[in-house]
Image (cartoon, rainbow, N blue to C red; front, top):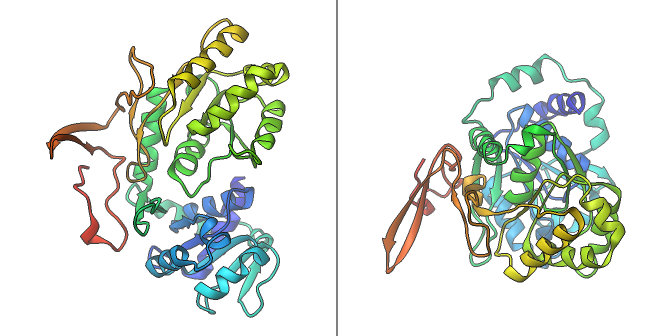
Length: 363
């Protein structure tokens, strides 16, 4: 992997990319996505993983246009050029170059992903790598944009590294044995792309890409994968746990594989119902003779992402836990409620090109 990353970094340096002209990744999780993202970070080039839905599902491409207008990307990566051709033609200037794993967009300056690997990484790539530091921008992650247009969160190397150290001190099991993850969570979100990918990178683990999703159509693929690979920790959203507990209750082969190395459960992004939690405890007790600790916490894109974890004696639905190591939390009365304010090395420096939209930052 390192040889590939250095080769890609060497190639990317030829495009004149920077924070003002970053790499934009329009397609979803795959090994090429990970390689070019790591290559960009090696070269000190910020990148942005964009939600594939902005290109594949949107009819007016409003959010993709907003992302590209804000970032002004200097290079685009897609897995399948044909699938993304309409979005690229409608939104991106003709002079913006393209890297694709498969296919061609007519009229574009384009190279194949394979061509980025042809030239070995050299001194230029290593010089660029050595020039990066804690305040270097690793990537831009966009907020969900559920009520307004998404904002670009500046995510630095300091934020990513600090958050992984917080995780390791909270979950020392990751140091005892290299983690094995089977994961579907999208890398354009902080849970999948920063939290979970980071756990594997920081602790020398193994990451298996799961092409399934916790949907009626997609979860069968996840179950097939979990019958092939036994993870040491499983981290997903509550909907994923709802689907999984039903399958575990009814499939002995799945239970054998799933619990073979399991040390830790984790959920985030929403609340997990107590009824699902209790069912997971019962399945684990019946199969393993003991419960597997379910962990959760409070996080956000702006904190890369973790702020609190459910350490301590309480482990129940609705509990967000205690501050992560290195994170300070202050509860301030605002309009009859308590507002949480956070400070630490994992907090963003701000939103990209949106100084008027800065929250009360506590770093």
